[in-house]
Image (tube, rainbow, N blue to C red):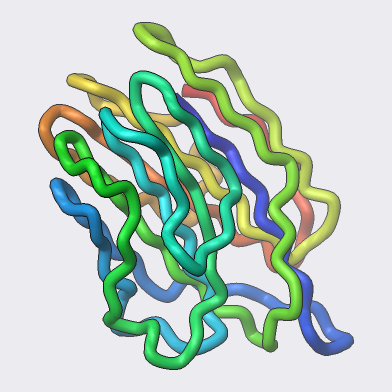
Length: 193
């Protein structure tokens, strides 16, 4: 399964914001994940949450981007963090048999007024690689996000433009989350597994 996402963030002031990666956290075999202690109020946290049983759900207080119920349940959500969120635990999917969670935290240079997920693409396939996916980036700044998961195999994407990759494996389920920060130039992306 590959999930390609573009997150467009609107700045509160006149000048557009830029973004920097702050930290990540992972958890396995748990219903919860911890917000990285380096996070601050105003940061944007993205949660990739997958499990093999149960029902896909968004954590309380988080905004959903994508949800899939199938062989694996997956949800992707975000939250603009507030004071006291750093180091706190977030409850995601409560079934933990094949649970893998990855959280990415990004810091805007100016306060965020809006978050607009766009160019949301997904393709769930079983026993085969997902088809190529395209992400249209209209203008910077933007976060391009990707996720791929596999059971009893190593998931990967072929592209090398990513600024970072975070991986976690539990009970045969491997998940990788990828991100690219486009602060200055908008570049459309094509992703293949």
